[in-house]
Image (cartoon, rainbow, N blue to C red):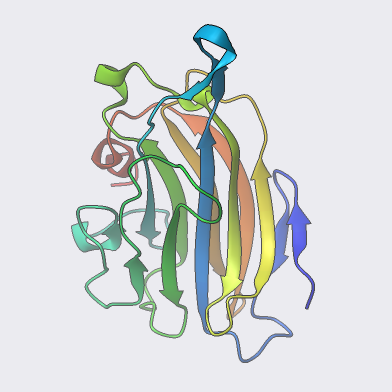
Length: 197
């Protein structure tokens, strides 16, 4: 199956017509914007972006702390959502961080898995998503790592310190993905998560 590029607001079926798909990976990538320094040398600021998954119930609420999977809580209590670990700079090719999900093990009371990215220590470092380029979220087949869908976050997110990238959600017994791409203001993932409690 060829990868499908989504635009903001688009939704796509993941499991319908793909019955064997139970394990997926949300891959997130970004690069610091390159600025010209002295003598034309290029320099990039180290920006520590942190990907997280917020597991929400049918009403869109985060009902327990263990349903926030992030750099300080790398897996949900049910072990259905697991964070790959923290990339501190965003340098290099490929996904900077990944969140693995076993859709068959996600508890029945979880209806959405919201995938978000925050900038760590954004206030002290005076950083926002205007200093990031080539950001994307993609969903991979967890068994063979083939890309199913990709959403390039190409808007100008200057001033935003958090980015709501997309969500996997249940619909009629199947799982779908929605490309959201909304900038927000939250100095820490815990602050963003509180908005759903």
